[in-house]
Image 1 (cartoon, helix red, strand yellow):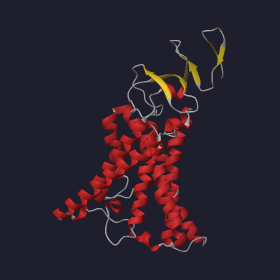
Image 2: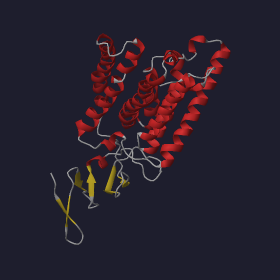
Image 3: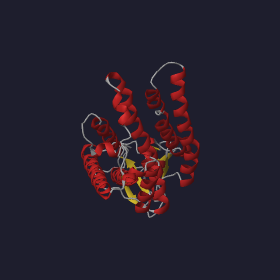
Image 4: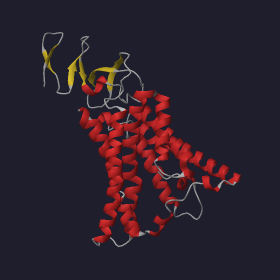
Amino acid sequence: MEGRVGDEDGTKTRCPDNATESQDGGGLIPDEARYDVPVATGGDALQIGAETHCNDPTSGSDALSCSDTGSTRIVPWSLLDVVIASVLFVPAGVAGSIGLGWALLWLGIVEDRLMAGVLGSALLPSALVAAGWIFGVRRHGVSAAMLGFRRASLFETAWLPVVVLAIGLSVAMVYALIVKALGIDILLPEQNLDELASFDGLARVPVFAVVSILAPLGEEVFFRAFLLTALVAAIGRLRGMILSAAIFSVAHLGIGTLFPIFVLGMLLSWLYLRTGSIWPPFVAHAAQNALALVALELPFDTPAALITT
């Protein structure tokens, strides 16, 4: 409910619905500002671990001017929210993806089984976004900015993802060379997109949309904006990054990609915490998967094809 707060000159300022008055007279505190959520402030590194009281949103921007008060609360959702959301939405997303693929074949909408699987798999990232949205944003009555849907600078969106991508691909390449030299074939990353090379023309459009757009978006919302922030709130920044990256890696169900995807997960976690926005890690993740699709056309193996996520 809207209320009024007295200003220094005696006038009254209307409080927005999602704001409360600061107890120390410092001004209005948006509900989402009472947590130390990822906030991009002109390229400054994100500071995790202190509750943030913000006087007012910067005009026309999601950036907030804040001061620390010493709390350790980071986001309104807890690990329990993440666990419940995972139990409800992840199996449903997997089952829905399989069911949609079979339905497309049965109805004759598509005739190719692989294409039906690709189209059906679009439901899984949708379920991941729904999990974070319902158990994060909607359940706790906060804005989408709490889930990372906030603007980032050009440097954060264009250049930092390039650095993350370069490091991730370099690690994947060195890892593959070492494992191959040691003769440990079971640890070699699988070329899990080879079958997609059979598509050509317009058939590549849905493949690109799912692999390079929907999948990265769903995974970044769930693993970084939703899971990572809850873990950081519960066990600290570094341990939260490590555990979320480990879960991200295991979720891809490939022994040969465990290490390179873990490294990529750490890099994407750092990027999210650094920028406070979902878009920089999404750009890096989407570029990684897009490069993997392009690599299918090359006559030799590339590091991009090793860690499609």
